[in-house]
Length: 535
Image (cartoon, rainbow, N blue to C red; front, side):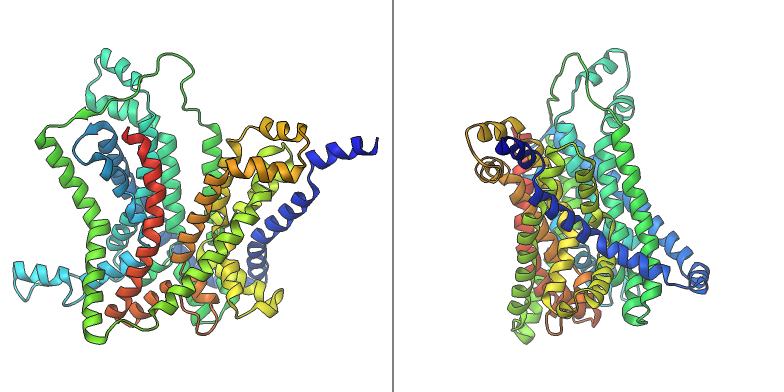
């Protein structure tokens, strides 16, 4: 009789997972709570001073940069996705995943490459002077709004491209056929039928772009463009003013949270699926050689600007530096530091995610949904804010860990755990609960059913989450700058230090190693997702 009462409780409300989920969700929101606490300590005069002198211009700069970058990525992402799905041309399969490779290059490396090219003696300056004479000169890119938009747009357009491409791959062309039969011209069919039906994918991609621009620190700092993230870092490091940094961080968090809420609200209200009728898959149009040449020219222009030019410059600078001074001996130490911190963060994260993702997908319980939403806090906490929050936590709650690598790993956990959570949540949703029920009926315990049934079926999502967290941690810059112990430099930190001091030949090898580690891993994920579209 006792076993009958305990069995449903144990199965339906796993106590260990519930406690673990509570601890993980609390950990994820603690930096936000500490930042809010510091911000509320600010006196009225501090708020007035910041609103009168700093916040309005930062709002204008950050929002305008996000909107302009979103517009650029919309044009690039939609057009590229349309070409690789609607037309059949030589090399289509290669281009379908090659166009996403710029995501493997951190924006601050792209910013370093472009600013270096426009410095006196840079590639762009020499080419311009070769065309128009030695007296002609292009402006340097520091502080120029269009240049920052260009760099961030090239770095983030794959978010829109990948989502729209996936949407167009599963698009029902019968909608267009109905419009064609009614006499609608091709260009009107695109703007009035096809494009509106891709709105969920487009909005999801633009949401990621805008949120990324809100959180970017490296590119805007290297190009000396004032945004919230750069101002927060300068307040904390340059002026040691934690209160002002917290106030600015709270404003940026509010902006990110509002954007996140609007995106979730729009997604929950949208219904873009076919409820009946005939489904017909879109058949690509065979291109003539002129059409294929035009498509290749456009794809090469975009890919060359976002990936080819950057890699070529890094190789050139690396060879130049090695010929003059040899390969930096500490480069392998920086590489090991990056691999160690990122690997630990990714491995710990995938284990920490399991209770939150499993409970939220298996039980209709408000408490578990609170766990899930709290664990997504990293989406609205940019890198500098995570760094500030973890710094406060380490000073007040984790004093023995202050100044150690553990604090850096903790920042990576909070910053990037949502990426792995999204992958695991999707994987658990795809596993039918009756498989676990069958295992339990055969006598397996709750934990044995997880280990023998659920986890093997979810291994792809778990591995995907690990790769995403690892790659993102390898590229993380602001939190590492704020929290790293003395002498613990990662590849991202060395790139920042060397470019800040204009030692570009020393920064290039570290940038190449970082891309060589992250880009192939990211490319494998992209290639795996791209294969079905090629069939």
